[in-house]
Each structure stands twice: as C-alpha cells, then as structure tokens.
Length: 444
Image (cartoon, rainbow, N blue to C red; front, side, top):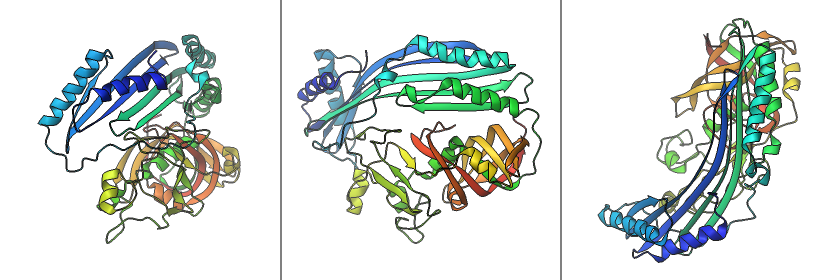
C-alpha cells in the first residue's frame, strides 16, 4: 500500500527534517497505487497495477540549493539522502530567484479529492468495463479500443520553517474509440471522475458505437466559417488553451495577456460577457488539492468574470518583484454553463456542424492564441434543426478568444476528458458562430 496516512507521512518527514545540518530543508513525500486495463481490436491487450513511494529532499545554504531523491525509508537511508542533498547544495551556484520555504500555512476546508468507492476498484471491475465495451461492439460489427485507469495517491510536504501539508486523492479515467469494421465510421466517448460512481463506461461505449455507425460514409463539406455545436470535450480542448495565465509571461510581453505598451490585461474585457471561469479546489464535481507544490494555499478565485480578466497567477518570486501578493496556480478550471442540451442547440441551428472532439492541436501564434487542429470521431452536418448526414473531418484555425467572442449558446457543464491535455475542468458544451474550418482532412 503506497498511500501513507497523514500520520505516517508526517512521521517520516519529521525524521528527514531532523537530520538536516543545512541552513534549511524542505522534503516532499509522494505515493500512488494504480491500476489499468487496455483493449484494442476487441480484446484486452494489457492489464496491470503499479505502486510507488518517493521522497524528495531539498537542502539549501543561502541561495545555493541541492535536491536528492530516494525510495527507501529506514533511518540510514533517510539520513543518506539528506547528506546527499547538502553535498549538492554546497556544489551548486547561487540561484538569484531562490525563495526560502514558507512557514506553516492554513488550508481552507477539508479536501474533497478522495473517494472510497474509487479506492476500492478491483481488477474484476476493470475487466467488466472492458467486457461491457467489447461485447456490444462485437455484435454491431464494430471494433473497440479503450483504456481505463484508476489511481489512489497522496502528497505530503514539510520543511524546517514548520510547514506541514498533506492531501490524498483518487481518480478514474475512461476513454473509448469505436471503429466500424468497414473502416468508414468512428466514434469516441470518455468519462473522468474522483468518484467512479459518477461515470458510466457502458453508456460511453454505447455513445461511441452509435457515433461510429452514424458517421459511416461521410460526405465532404466545403471548408469555411460555420456555426458549430461543440460537445464539452471539444469546448474544453480550446478553452484550456487560454488558461495559461502566468503573470510573469504577461509582464514580460510573452503572452496573450500582455498589454500593449506594457503591463497585463487584468481588468480588460476579452470575451463575451457571459463567460465566467474560475478555480475552486473544493468544487464538488472537479475537486483539487488545497495546496500547491511549495505549500501555498489555493483558494476559490475568478479568472475571467463577465468576460473580463480578473486574475493572473504570480509565483512567489515574481510577486516579490512586483510587490504584490503571490497567486498560486489553480488545480482546476470551472466555466459556468447554461441549461441547453446538445439536442436543444441542434434544434436551434439552421446550418451548422456538430463536433464530437478535436485532436492534434498545435499553436500558430501565442500572442493571439491562434491554434490549428483537426476534428475527429464523429463530425456531422446540421440542417434545419436536425443532423442531416456525417461529414468528413476538417482542419480548423481558431483562437479560443475569438471563439468565446462568437458565443451563441452555453450548454450544460461536464467534467471533461480532452484529447491532449488535462485541465481538470468542468466545462460546458457550446454553440459558436463563424468557426473557421480551413481545409478538409481525409482521416476517419
């Protein structure tokens, strides 16, 4: 069992701190237990579990710091890793941006990142998920490929200034792609949660099968600007790209949040006034650790409020340079949604495109947040309030800023799985006007 209790972690870290002969010391203890099952071509290919605990120690003399790690926890090993970190610190050059560790912090309410239900996931559960996905696919001439991964982990931090922090968390992620056996149709669905009872892998598999069957023999649609209905994964994969809200990059003129002539865009309206995005470590559906890696306390905080930039993230060094309070990076992102379902948005669309998800998204211009990428696994043409037929995939060139200025309708929020990043987000589906598809893609 690699998930140590709060008392067990504190006991080890106190020993580590006690061995220190440096000006100061900070130690982190992290552990995880996890399991997974992967299937492809309608059969299980891999299944396994892993378990690990690691101790990281940073000692410092003045502004010279050294770090060493170990995964042995007897007293001799603990003293050995402390001595090694001190040796490395003596050899290191001074770090002009070094910040001494924090004293004890206060961390809001009780963390919501742990679920006993998820912690009790068994190999039999994982096998049933695979079976419930593969069996219906086989009966419909469809090939399933999926991956279920569950985890239980803890993080603890202590230092010679008296700080101690501890958090434990669970998580489960499921993704599945269904391909018709004639190679002309593809569907995708996913689910993620802290509490496994909040996802339904069987339903996700059915959705992916239906999308695969309905997307066979797609027709080509001329590239151009279209009204789009974005399912929540597609929405999130673009929204997450505007949430690198680093104040230093903005102050130094290296990001979209840099203000012309100097400074940042805090206080500027950048998107539709219906857009409200915030971070909250105690959110019921997408909780996060109440502290960040150096021990700073997270808090509920607006990022975009009424379309206006409310806050940027300041690390402790940069905050000191700017004479402002540090603002630690959030552990999640929540965008307020509306009440419309995907079906509601389709009914209200005269001509448009339904997008299941995006894939292979790459930056074009970081100053304007222009990105390019592809649609995938279920793209459909909407006409007069109904899905008329499947269409070939597109390449898009779009910015989340332009997209959120062209907002038509906000749908319901979901905890999202995205294609290329994990925003730990609770993001709505959306209807957007004038979304730019630049060319066709022959990929199914």
